[in-house]
Image (tube, rainbow, N blue to C red; front, top):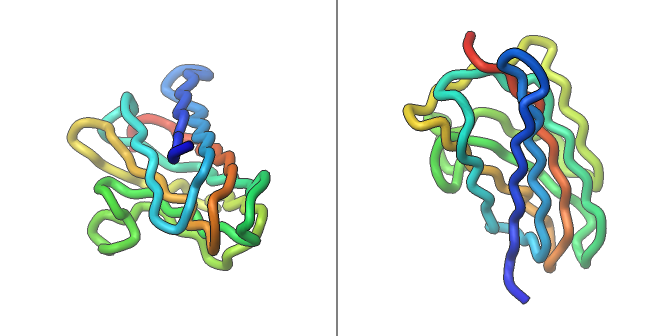
Length: 126
């Protein structure tokens, strides 16, 4: 089996979205593409759980280009301390802009192939 991300975007109100990224065989550099968001928006929360696999921690990152952690210019939201479960609630929403509304997510598992579920709460506009 190969890395398989499933991305679901659910509109939950006037300009608010729940984005769920479900991954099987997630590893240290596997990446999911999130398409269909507004070009500018605010990240309100990043919630991620290592469900199963050989890894022990995840360190999720979200950005506007592939390999989002590689550059401060493309990284929107990173995690502070790797753990099996992450719940980052922004005290102030984190603004982003991407011309076509495409974002890139990596779970960054510490080892092996894993099942990971991540939820982003996003609002459109600034």
